[in-house]
Image 1: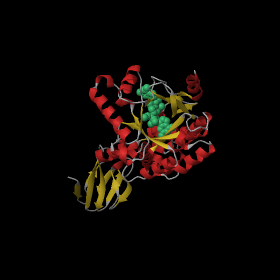
Image 2: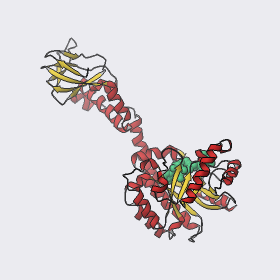
Image 3: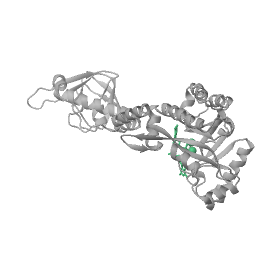
Image 4: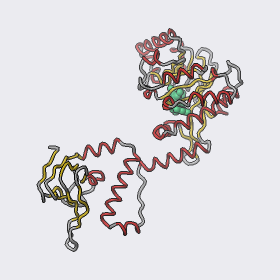
Length: 384
Ligand code: C2E
Ligand code: MG
Ligand code: MG
């Protein structure tokens, strides 16, 4: 039963009981009190009325009840199960969850030792995962300012000749504290905290600068930059990229914007119009990671894209799967009909390259040709 009707004077729970439920007061008054421990009198801690909640502390931190709850008047209570509270904490942002636990701890201490003693006592405790994240966010923001996030380059090649057509710029964080980190180490936090925007723009600026170093001709190697779909929710990206192109004196066709995290693009977002704006100014648009996670076929006609990047997981094991080859070939034909160029990612072997050529693919990237490398090293290798 979810509702409990309580008579005046009835004990709802006692100090020391296990905490398995919290209560929302719908009607009546509840007294919360410390029971006497022999020496002291019972101490009233609170009188709570409708709209208040009690019994939640133990449910949040798993400790036994630190006080007893007694109905002062007849009362009607709604029971909130421990699992409901624990699940909502588990689902919440780690920082928020930890903040909640710290507040509960502080409240318990204040009750146990009183306000004045509490103020005099030195309080410190372990950093839990939520507070650790705040430190890491600080490290990352400072790392961005210090220029520690840098582009690595991976060539995009003509599969028939191996000739380099362009490069993809991939973020690496060369942190003094943690060493060299790849996106899977730091992008999830960057996405959660919004720092992804600053990373993307910093990376774009550095990548365009490198691209300008290849010359300013239309047909010099292009640069593909990864832009999180988060940017498609604010309208400043188009102007920022246009400004960068002017600053680096690059023709717009020399850059290609790869849209990652396509699951963020929904029917209601402005993504289509923003991508169209980018494209109108001559920047090419690639849909990244096609074939993984959320990449519906509708994107092929709904979004104004020039390039489709097929994820490496779709080519893994193609030699032994005629159906997989069939899907890939069909996809290539479909893209050709829609005038969409295709780049296959994650090509690791000569054998895969051969099969992709047989299926009619012409552009790709992967360790078979070159792994992502620091700029100087990537360019040195390309020149050799
Ligand atoms: P992505 O854009 O699909 O980049 C391709 C990923 O495949 C890169 O991972 C690359 O190192 C990896 N790769 C290259 N060759 C091979 C191969 O032969 N086999 C396999 N299995 N993998 C290969 P990386 O550098 O760890 O980047 C991971 C993802 O992080 C990128 O996937 C992209 O979505 C994201 N990312 C990287 N840099 C940025 C950035 O500056 N901004 C944003 N928003 N996302 C970025
Ligand atoms: Mg990419
Ligand atoms: Mg990809």
